[in-house]
Amino acid sequence: MPKVPKWMANAMESLFSGMYHPVKVIAIEDLQPRLRKIRFEGDFANVKKEFIPGNVIEFRISDTEFRHYTPSYFNREAGVCDVLFYLHDKGPGSKWVENLKVGNKLNLLGPGGKIRYNPEFKIHIAFGDETSLGSFVCIKNETEIQNHQFFGIAELDHKNKHWTQVLGLDVFTVSKDESTKANNAILKLEELLKQENLNKSETSFYLTGNAKSILSIKKFLIGNGFTSKQIQTEPYWVEGKTGL
Image (cartoon, rainbow, N blue to C red):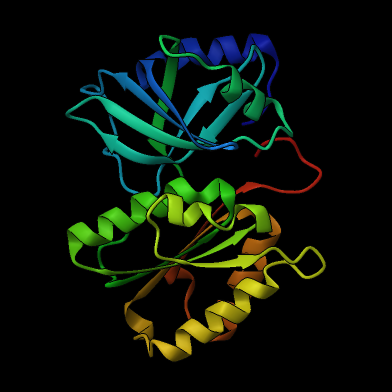
């Protein structure tokens, strides 16, 4: 639901008012020139759905546009939520984030979405790009709580490959391959599966970020004997389209 007419956006906010939660920006930290961490504070006592790592939240960023973001941290009891934003300066969402200030009041919708950490599996592998790093952090932290294994493959622009270290993520980083989507990531994933000798039946995958890269990774996994139940996907963006 990236863009709708203003009258419809107003009607939806009114109709689903019980699902919107007032929050305030209480901290902004630029971890890197284009990597921004923002903490939101609010009363989440009435949140109807329990937050599960991998879930998304949503903000109305203008009269007609909404955007989904994946929290890196969500604490219902403390009433705080952290989001890592990639300031790519290529759309209204990025510009909205750049203009946020401490003290700004917003309405947060969620949590929800297609990705949900699955504790039935003992091995968790995340794939994504700059837009996925919040999800990486959240899922990694949950694996530590559950005493599970975590692996990640981050497909990043060369100038951003150090971001995983900034975030304390011990994951593999590969350069984007624009000619063949996720080609470098697939090579690294193939290497990971062989080297670690992972138990296939105990492995779960979380694929986020670019829609075309996700399709390539999923096709590779299905071709290597993994089932759809083991593969969760949520595209955040695709070339030629503003917002998903």
